[in-house]
Length: 109
Image 1 (cartoon, one colour):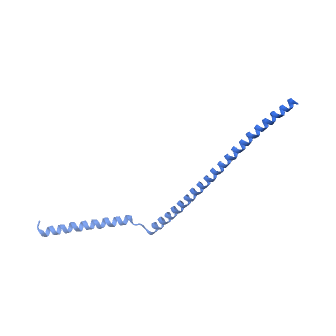
Image 2: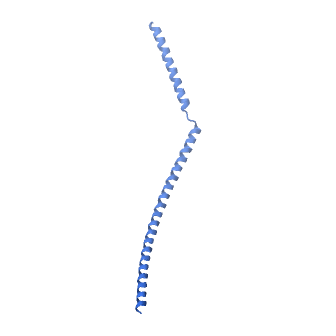
Image 3: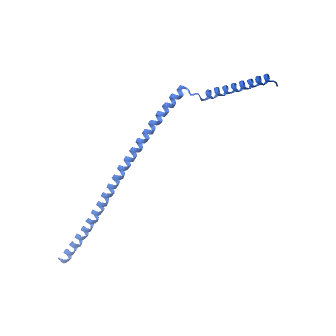
């Protein structure tokens, strides 16, 4: 193989490599190309996701606020119940004392 043949074969190999690279680049761009309608749809989906996240955050804040209110109301109700039970206990004690006093008065009189 002389020098001219070597240069010619090298040129052919380089040209084939260039063609294969160009074809591979064309295939990659062909399959990864995003159309304008796809971009618009992605923007719409992103906006919907953002709105859904905002609604979720608002719902979580509402639930936490409502839970705090309900816990406060429960504590107040329990305190009122304890006070009522204590009042009932005192009233029963007083009634028992009055009953004993009346029986004592009836038996003495």
